[in-house]
Length: 100
Image (cartoon, rainbow, N blue to C red; front, side, top):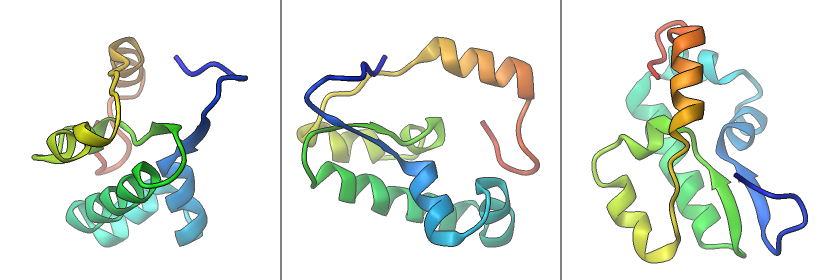
């Protein structure tokens, strides 16, 4: 879990995409489709990995994309928050046509 006060910033990829697109993630996903959304997400993670050390929150979908973790591993450390994933999946069951 990210701790405030550590010597790294915090980058929330969904927040970046929401700001850039001016609409909620579910709408971006629905309007542009999963392949385009995942490419946008991948580019933002790549950019974040190239900046100052930070805790990066890309969302669970990013890590499930073929090659995403392998491409990023040389540039960072990774931790999967399984409890948060189970909780979110159990309580929401998905958002529109956006999978968990």
